[in-house]
Length: 205
Length: 378
Image 1 (tube, rainbow over the protein chains, first blue to last red):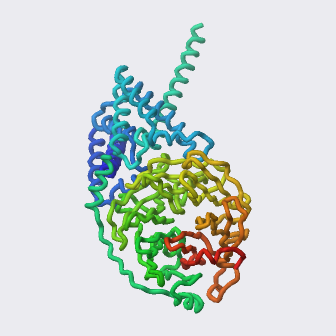
Image 2 (tube, one colour):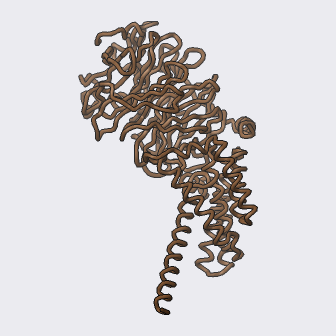
């Protein structure tokens, strides 16, 4: 079944990306990243019960399109030193994912909160809103954000994931955590910058 | 539509042969039971389904097209052990066949491509002459880390379709369990009374498509610690839900009901039946009344009784004591008596069947005619 293939390929991508990133971190070179990638590739073709994806799939479930986007970005940066997502687009993506997560996760844990996750099953409004947003991002030149949304809509439309819920195609819990980290880091950096410029202004005056 | 086509193609290619011998055998647990079994159409008939493993729990059962019953439960060294598998046995109207492993940890691990640490509650659904087994599994942690899987079998328990994972929760798809029979909607979708156990316990209705994928999820708004729902559908669009209450608060069976296919729910309310945080089960009777199996004694599961009421809100009257704390010969060495996790169903011949866990060592089956449940404690 195609959703199983998509899921397994996603977790192979997870293995090679993370190992490539660790390789770069350890050896501080592209060669280290390539070695990490190669180890990940070898591990991925081991018999099912010895492969990392047998375990990562059981813990993380199917990866969403946002996880794929983050992992491709991580792989590209580790192996080629090329960032596919600009900081600005990364912040927009993270903001959408974090707001989405705050909408759907509380009710899923039993909090007295409207169950927005349910909207993802069959809501023409939600799908239309994200389709319109994708085109707005294209016209504003934020192509990675638009690509993310369009791929999520495609995944949902063709049932490429085990879940038939649009939210699960858009982002998952691991990518929500990463997005929260990106936003948090940006907020801290910005407040530090503001504080620094205030201090400089005071010193000047 | 595309998914459905792909699924049909994939399931055809993935047929998996699992040969199970269905040797007819029965182990009478007492002379009285053995005597009852010799009768062709007994009014009441209680029998233990023989178990080759030390610990069994959580029986589920279905009636096949030819009138035979198939029961499934989980069994192994103990609950949560790695050797726990889903066992099955077939009842031909007289005897239960020798139980066989129907689904193991490996079956689901290989089918879903995921590591499985332990198996839990099964729920069986008959679809034509196929048996669809929905099985709770855990990969990491305790039962709050549960996920749901579907295994498709033919009537002889050969795997005939794709084993799939149901996605009921966006948070790593953890914490969703089932224990009760689903009901079918007009279009063929099944609605499972499910429940969530991660952080908070609460009931959810999972709507599952014919290919085993979740297409809707409705959380039933309840107070704290009401879970393990059992659903009845008295008429089209109406759903009545019995709920088990957790141990920390006044343990009493609660009900909630919906008149719009489960879209909105009335506030859950007590029905005057004490229940010590134990599983419950219910079935609609021919005259419109409701039969409920519950453990009414506070502080234990040593008494399993059938109650009957004209409607879900009561008044509830005990109509049959299934098993009580009065120890029988084979229970003298057991430290804590437990008759739990009832599964009630009505077969096409109008008979009521109750399956329950007997001291965690046997699955017992009680067959009883509706006339025997007219009233008055027996």
